Length: 352
Ligand SMILES: Cc1cc2nc3c(=O)[nH]c(=O)nc-3n(C[C@H](O)[C@H](O)[C@H](O)COP(=O)(O)O)c2cc1C
Image (cartoon, rainbow, N blue to C red):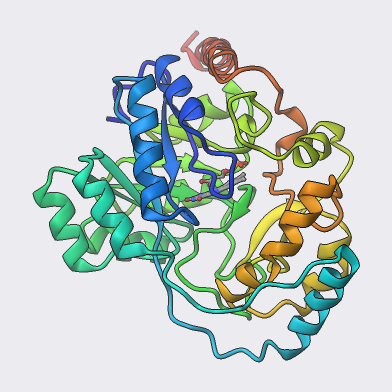
C-alpha cells in the first residue's frame, strides 16, 4: 500500500484532536495516504471516524493504536500537588492519575470488524495473538520503532512494515520503554542513522518519520531507503486538522524552541517550550498514562482559555517551515519540491 503511492507521503496519526477524517481523506485524494489516530478515542468514536473517512474517500487508510504498557510504580505525590496548583489557577480540578489500557482490545476489534487494511502500533509490540488475528484478516501490521533493538523485536514479532521514528519527531516518542534514565525514554536516534542501521538488518518496508517538512526531506528519506515519509507537524496547521487555535498560533509564531518532556503525559514527547514544561518538566515522573490523565483537565482548560503556557504544543523540530494551506496543497507542494530535489541530485551525481 505504501510503496505504490502516487506521492510517498503519509499523514501521521495525531491523537488528541489534530487527526480528522477530512485530513486523512484529503491526503488520500491528493495521492498520499494517512492514518487515523485511535488513541484516546472510545471504540465507538473510532468506529465513527472510520465510517466518516470512508464517506469522504474510497482509498485505503490506516488506524494507529497505542500499545498498553505496564503500570509504573513511580511516586506521584509531588507531581499531583504541582498539577493541583495549576488546576486551581484555572479554577478547575486536576484529573485522576489512573493507569488504563485505552480500550486497546475493544479498539482492535473495531479495526478488525471495519476491515481497515493497515494498523500501526506505537509504544510497543502488539501481542502475538493480535498479530495472528490481523494477519488472518489480511491486515498489514506496522510497528513504530525508534532504535535498531526495537526494529529487531518488531521484525521477530511479525511486523509487515516498520515506521522508523527519528529524534526530531513531534509529540510522543514511540519507544517501547519509558526508561527514566533516558530523557527520550530510550536511546535517541536521529532519523538517518536509524534508517541506515535498521535497513541494514531488515528487508521490511520502512516508513520514515520525524522532523520532515519539505519535499527535499521526503526525497532524502526515500533516497535513504524508505518507501514513504510520514509527516505530522507539516499538517498541523491545515484547515482540515483539528488542532486547537492557540496551538496553531504558537506554531505560526515560530518563536519557540522545541524540547522533549514528560511534563504532560509521563512519556517523552516533543513540544514547543512553554511555562508548564519549564516549571514541571524536570519533576515529571515516567508514569504513562497516569500523568496524561492527571494533566488532561489543565490542558483542556488552558486550550479553551487560549493560554499557550499550560497546554501541550506538540511540534517536530522542523515546525517553523510548516504552512497553513489545505492538505492537498501541502502534499502538492511536497511533491513539487521532491521532484526538484531529485532533479538536483540527478545532475549532481550523474557520471560526467
Ligand atoms: C500532535 C501530534 C500527535 C501525534 N499523535 C500520534 C499518535 O497518536 N500515534 C503515533 O503513532 N504518532 C503520533 N504522533 C507522531 C507522528 O506519528 C510522527 O512520528 C511525527 O509527527 C513525526 O514528526 P513531525 O511531527 O516532525 O513530522 C503525533 C505527532 C503530533 C505532531
